[in-house]
Amino acid sequence: MPPTSRLDMWADKTACSLVNVDCLLPTGVLVPIQVRIESTLGEIKTKLWREASSFPLFNFLKESTSYVFVCVNLQGKTEELVDENRQLIEARPFRPLLKLIERMGDREEKLQMSKIGNLLGKNLDEYEQMQNAEVDEFRSRYRVIVESISRERSILDWESRAMYAYPPDVDPEGAAPDFVEKNLMPNRRFLVNVAIRNNKASIKDLHAFNVSADALPDELLTLVLKKRGAIMGVHDFDNPKDYVLKIVGKEVYLLGCYPLLQYRYIRDCIAKLERPALSLVQRASLKVELNVTGKSAPGPENRPPPPVPSKVSGLSLWSINTNFRVKIASAFNVNIIEHMKVSAVVFIVKSVSYLKWSIWI
Image 1 (tube, rainbow, N blue to C red):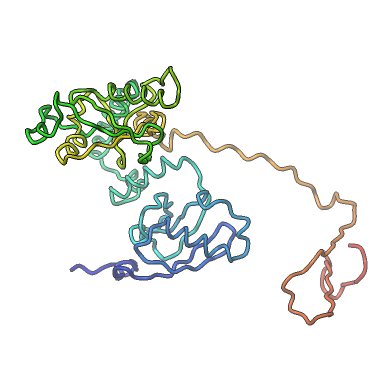
Image 2: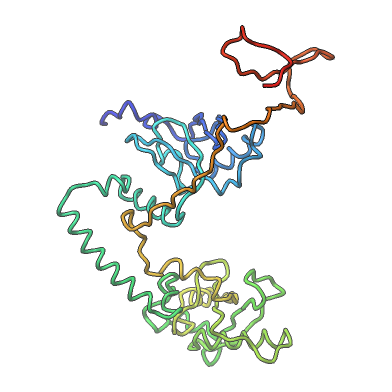
């Protein structure tokens, strides 16, 4: 086994080991906490927030989601730990010292760059500095390919983009096996439960529909909306283009123009003599635009320069003609005996020997 670096303190840690981590808050307060090396950064932040509530200046902090950890990695570079699902042992800071700073810039972009860096095994800034003509040529060619694919996806309709984000789980072979066909009702029909009011699929909200195995999801969706309109007393039912059917308990949707029996979930339920459970959800709830917009993140050279801070007009001390006054409103945690007086004075003199009391300064 090759020897480990003496600078890597994490190499000798065993599973479930505890480590003392010093966390520096934006207020300048250092909070020590003890965590397991497998703890995620999100868990560390939650524990830090509980501990920090008993430290001074906690009321000056914003919500915990407004901050992100930074550390010095083993390469001596400052690294922003955007992905809070990473474990502390995976982040491998040079020393167990984490600094909390306010989030700046595009969080989604930084999170994506962090995941890419984890896959590459090095920071993206170091990867950008690699001087290799073959690597540069490979990256430039694939950048052209990716941008071409992004442009093609950006002009697709909603359902086509949704199928990229949520690929439908269908059997490529259209014909169902014999053991599935024999469990169907006469005329190749089956019963399916659909929650028409919400996607939690409570027992009161489930309604059974008798549909054909060759029916398309849009046909079942039309039946569901008609049933929903009849229950709610609405004669003009909603537009089917605004809704989609979702498998209960899974992030899987009945997208595409496939027969219902071709979807693996429905086929598996019929094979087990179980009734499929679906729910009615709005299309707007699907995160489609965020995943497949086809917009590439701007590089550092394309980003606009930061705005110039506005100049604050100052006031010269020599132009102030009024006297300076100080009033002490209260004092806390003063270690004195009861009924003892405390004197306070502000003086500006060359030395203490010139000090005079009870005068305006």
